Image 1 (cartoon, rainbow, N blue to C red):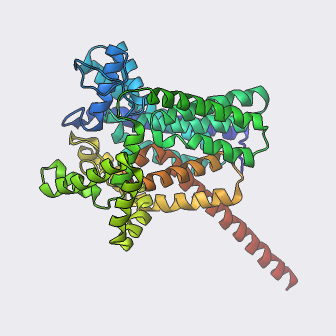
Image 2: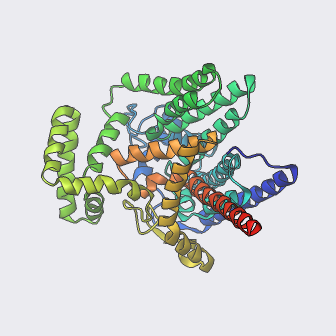
Image 3: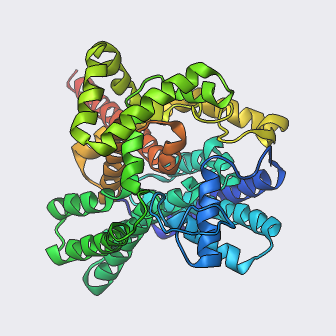
Length: 451
């Protein structure tokens, strides 16, 4: 149900949200200032840095090694995050200072993500439920630790949450203001997709769902659809004109093939420590990937033959992938919540932070179950447009990651949406309990009166 607060409640809500925002900001700032990584830029961060360097110094979007004689444009990675890094690089030429500023900016983006999620959630959640979900967003270890890595998850989380919050505002207004808010939401969904291509279908799907669900004019959702699709189409046209073979479609194919192997994560970790068993599995995966690029039909036939040898194993694997996305330990990482190795982390050294990570890891399965309950309740009742949008985003993105690679790191941008759905389940359960208790009390009263 869409919720409206009285004046006094609005002030209390504003104070609660401000306090939680401050908590989120302070924890992230403390983390990036005190955590110490072994190597600041490694793995995927090397490519992001290369893209940012070439954008800043050559005006070319390319993952060619910085300082390379030939810089060839490509579209293997999405442009959103490298563009942010390049903007900071142009403003701060000193690389050491630049890296520190990147982490501070990401800490701020993480805190604003929490605030935006609460602004969306207050339209249907009670203040206690909103506060509970907000506190989880503020202290969740994955969301804090990722801010110290030069990776796109923090920016993606901010953009997808800003998209939902802006669309929530659009749904609560009419006339020209609604058109403006809807256009802004469409552009933010496009920016999200240009930061993480997995989100490319999300904006159009949300626009179509709301067209059939809400009573606004078709022009409103046509504006959103156009603002979402036009930037993506422009980027695809650019990609089609490039001589480089590296493209985001190749990366999606790679993720699809890798995600079809239940032992891929373990094999990669073995490979990273020089174990030949890991290399053998990765070589087999690479054969399928190359075959898919040369002939999708032959590649799919090769994958189908492999799966047919043990269908039960693969059925169980794909059934487990949604949970893997929302599970705790990052599989392609370095122990627990860390993508890259760390020498020192507040979650390891500070007693209060150790309590936080212990509690969060213990309740993570419960949050997952509650989020499912919140999604079911939201879709069944459809009383809140904002809640429906969040449920659609969660379901659609989980389905995409189930088909491709499923890994807790990829779920980090969607954690605020998960917590809002978990809070929805608790709020819905409490409302049902009160109704049934009230009905039981009335029945008892009537029975006593008749007696």
